[in-house]
Image 1 (cartoon, one colour):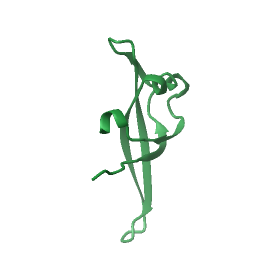
Image 2 (tube, rainbow, N blue to C red):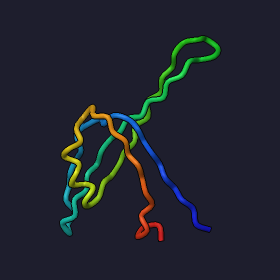
Image 3 (cartoon, rainbow, N blue to C red):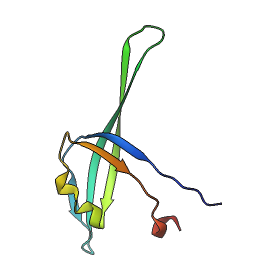
Length: 87
């Protein structure tokens, strides 16, 4: 049975991308994205906040766009299944 896994993250970039090159010449970029959820605690009435960090890796053409991403920039990221990896 086939399934579709898609994720959309909206957050802030935690640091400038780390750009590396693979032995075959392909570009790889690593980005850290912080997403924050806030809510009001029902018991105490105080505002609570939870920040989660996501490590995102970009390959090939998408990685070449990483120099346009900077620390503290707002960012929306969407994942799409890779047919070469997912079969």
